[in-house]
Image (cartoon, rainbow, N blue to C red; front, side, top):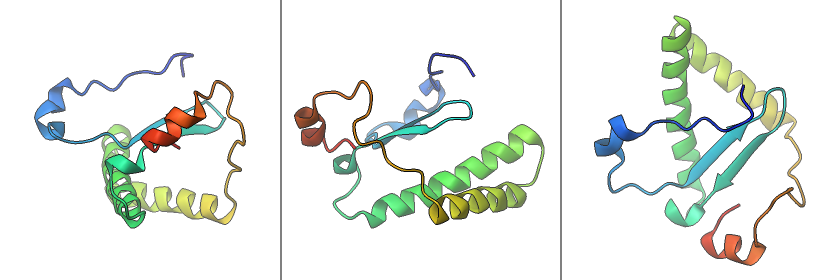
Length: 113
């Protein structure tokens, strides 16, 4: 991994995302924590919508892993759910005061978490 976030080029997918709202950004540090920014206001007032979106994400991720590693989608999906179940059983603690956190009032106004 590099020290800088690597942007995912969305230009080839602009027709697919046109008219959509971004509700999630995620970064991972090598052997370290995952940092997530969630904007619930861009998705739905019902938190269940996030669950549905995450399952969709997981299915796309399984396809990506399968293509990248030459394995089956089914095997990748199984491993992803194993990791999900392990994390649910022992959730990583949330930071109470993230380093470099922006102005809380404006973040809360946007619905960012």
